[in-house]
Image (cartoon, rainbow, N blue to C red):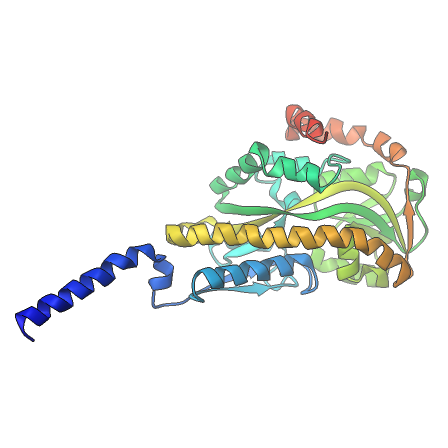
Amino acid sequence: MTKRMSRRWALKAGVVAAALPAMPAIVRAQDKLTLKMGTLGSTQYFYYKGAVRMAEEVAKKTGDRVTIQVFPNQQLGNERDMIEGMQLGTIDLAIINTPLLASFDSRFQIFDMPFMFNDWAHVNRVVSGQIGQSLLKSLESKNLMGLAYSTAGHRHVLNYKRPIKTIDDMKGLKIRVLDNPVHVAIVNAMGANATPMQYSEVATALRQRTVDGLDSPTAAVVSEKFYETQKYMSLTGHVFTGVVYLIGMKRYQSLSPELQKILLEAGRVGADLETEQHNKAEVDGIELLRKQHGMTIDTVDKGPFRARMQPVFDRFQDRVGKDLIETVRKMGG
């Protein structure tokens, strides 16, 4: 090759090299990357749909160099298992309910306090502002990185024995709740017997009637087919459950800044889709359960239910923070 040709090729190579930094490093990489993401619930539930939407966004932004494999139905373990897996680096991502995060920062129990949030608009004002971002920041020291918030909705009481129209109708019922002390205290304060249980055990417990019922958002009653074992649902709306899209900090820090940004943005896209679909299903689900699945659905006077909750606040408000509780209440409008 002549010197002139060599110089020409060098100039061309320089032009190409100069253009490369504008491309994300992950797109230039020859090796593909696969990330594992776990969710609760079936492929019909909104966690899975949000995770798949996130995976699609990541594939699009990286030119299919990065694949997120989504494992629904607790295939990667229950929530505690998935949290531990992310911390150890054996699982990359997961969608986790906020009650499970209270062990890392007790302020997460703001989501569990009874009758705290009016609706999603109220929740969104909290999570999109300083309070929500401060909570996500607190997880970083626990080897977890928060990407986005979504919703699991307000929880209502279901059972197979009798309609619940008043607080006295709760007496003696054995109700499955999340494995969280505040949720246990709320249902016990209603007069029922709260039974904390991992989600993977719920379907069997309902079929075998080792519990009389559970508390659940409307959307989950539909997608998880709780109507097959539960006859009655009462719209107590006694507690809101938030959702956080998480990635293990070790995995996050191992990625290029470009890919970190892509994952953050994709997490928000997936969470937004989940929120939109979940909130719509909360509205549509009541009539669907009543008309198509024959459930008896009752509204309740929430006043007597709220009146029973003072012992719950007395017990937990110091852990959550009295000022935080008051601030969140005021944000409800």
